[in-house]
Image (cartoon, rainbow, N blue to C red; front, top):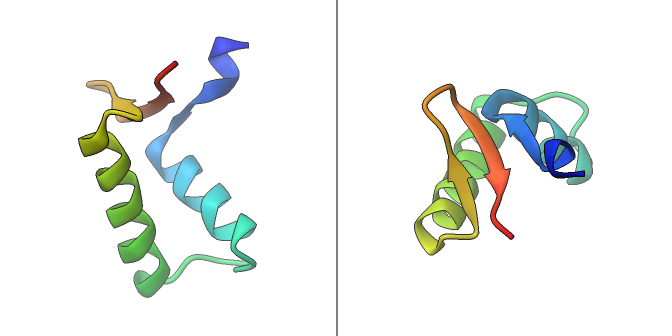
Length: 58
């Protein structure tokens, strides 16, 4: 189960965009999704490893 909560950042950004109803990402959506991911990392809800994988902190 834990491995399902870890994704490469690019894949996570694509999946978030899909969940928001976008069929493909643009510079505009990438910018705001990146900001949201960074915010969650700053808050400690997500972590990013040296390989660029994002993981949900339990």
